[in-house]
Image 1 (cartoon, rainbow, N blue to C red):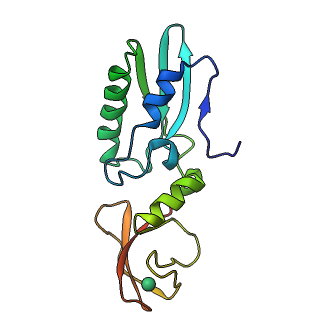
Image 2: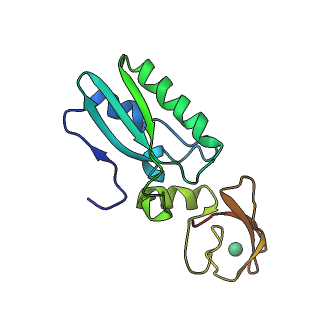
Length: 158
Ligand SMILES: [Zn+2]
């Protein structure tokens, strides 16, 4: 178990976990909230399921949609009593993104967060340059590869 993994109480019913594992990021639909490390904690408070999420950054517009998607998924799974809580501390870091998440991001054509050089998701070259701090969304920056000339998004470090 690594620091990125969500804390899931063993009493949490299987259908709840299955429902949560189906919730994806509205901006990057190949990534689940578990892959991203947004899902922090799932526990029971009596008969109520309590889901804790941490936004990738404060004010991330996708979080409203993610919360709605969690509520919808749990509702569809027949879970009647639940609440979704947001935890801002400790703050989310890109370290919480799972290995599976990083791989999926790369396959999707977005460079995973890297504190060092940003490698091109197309050809793997590390000879890349930053074009804009803001890519298709505020969570991403736009880069271009000097080797294959492909522009690509990079999931930013926080
Ligand atoms: Zn390239």
